[in-house]
Image (tube, rainbow, N blue to C red; front, side, top):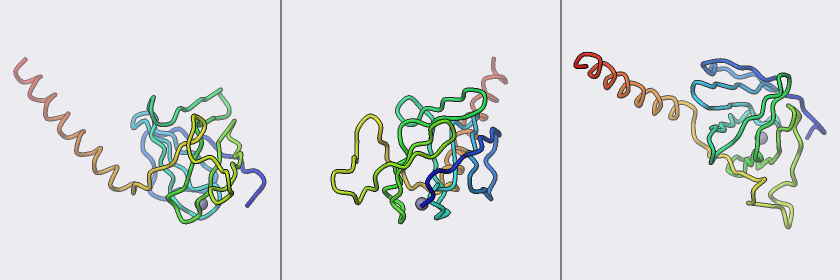
Length: 138
Ligand SMILES: [Zn+2]
């Protein structure tokens, strides 16, 4: 594992299909941040932004994601924080006494991107339908 890795914050509306390592793809429209696992295993790590999921801090240059990125459900089982765009490694989940929970720790759901995109597309089409009906009648 590298000692440190620097992420590039990349703000865009849509997340591209092919992701580059070392880039944090931030979609404010979808309230989602996606990056390739910092250990280099190539897993897509999806961190939804919400008061109960992850929070994003952008200081104009670097980004901080809180709480931690706990890839416990991925084969690599890596665990790290992204603070000021820098990867800060947490103790491996296999280390005795490693934190599995707590305010600083959060495990990532291994949800496939396509499923998430389909689900969001579904809700958006319902929303469009409602808006169309409202504008037609109101
Ligand atoms: Zn990994």
